[in-house]
Length: 598
Image (cartoon, rainbow, N blue to C red; front, side):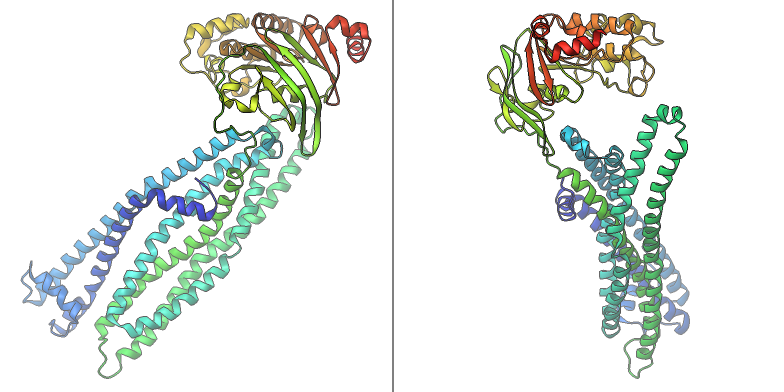
């Protein structure tokens, strides 16, 4: 589903037109019975004041003839009873069909919002990591959650009114023309003037709505950052700074919301005032017509006309209010469209190749990578044979983690190529390619779920015995068994209830269970105490057996047994060789080892 206003409306109407026709039909019946109930006014007033029905209009006589088929209407009292019973029936039918229209409209609204949320979430999963580097996390969350909610209560509510209210106004206008075409032509001149006044008030709502949502995204980002960095805020006594920053953003958001509320709230009373003004004008003009000699518009019929015309006021008011809501909701569609239209960058070729195993080697040929015009990696050439343990070392910012992220196509190289088994990785199916890799990183990502589900994350139909075996390999089984509910224990948001070493060993168990032929280990033992590092290193040594491993190392003592070491500096490979060779060369690597041994 596309989210520009034009495409959204087109998609909405094309997908839901059969059900919308049902809604349209029930609303048509509701309006028809509403008009019929009001048309009973003329015979009712005539009977009350004249005690006969001979002076009725054609419409009034038709109504009385219908009643006479069920009730003896020769006496005035019986005529009144018949009219009252018929009015009750008509009002019952009107409300029944109104309810049926709402009944069929409700699942349409729910289904559209569900589809929008699914589309946005699917898009967020597909978008490259570089997209999120340029976005505030809170703004993305606000767009995915709040803006879809806004669509339901602005766009979809407005669409419902756009379907119902013009139909209601049209049918009432036809009825009014039947009663008096001269008076109705006069009304048609006045209605557009009221519409123009309302549109002038609501013209800026779309612009203000977009700014409001941007400020809301900033607020959510601020809250998310505050919760993530609460320990630092407390440690540095930065409460006042955090409060001032939030209050400033909140003031800006409140200010723009105030403008929106005032304009939206003005639309309803303004439309009601204009409607009542129209009624007064019609009363004056209509009264003049009634008092003319030989006028076909009798007082009774004129009262019926006013009653029918008064029923146009509320639909007109609802229509103009819906129009203002629609204008406001367009800003939500604009923001959703900005996500849906974002370039996916990492795309799969139409006839992508399958790959289910790793047979020979990984080769980077003259590979460079740039991010926002800045080149991060320069002319990288490396070779990794199956079964090798290869280490990437160098100072912070040298490009080690970026190089590793290129292998499962989190990013694509700007120039050159990366090949697995002699084929450019861009020629493979993305899901097949990524299934070759097991990732264990310094920044462990765990989910607010059970231990078992975190270990089996991303895999289907995994047996409990396989999860247990993976935990044993990762040296985390005894700890899991000590938890209150064992493998079914919930570990909290991001594994907050676990230590750093425990979280890391859970991520290793996840990699073990995945059983991928290539392991990507990104500083998996950094920032740990000695005991935790020892346990994690034992687990890593266990899973690296008979696998190809690419290791980004912080502590160089952990990669001394690597088959080959690449030393990166400022995006270039400046040295390569075994641990012993690089030490003998006395270059960059030897200096890094010397610094760590001091």
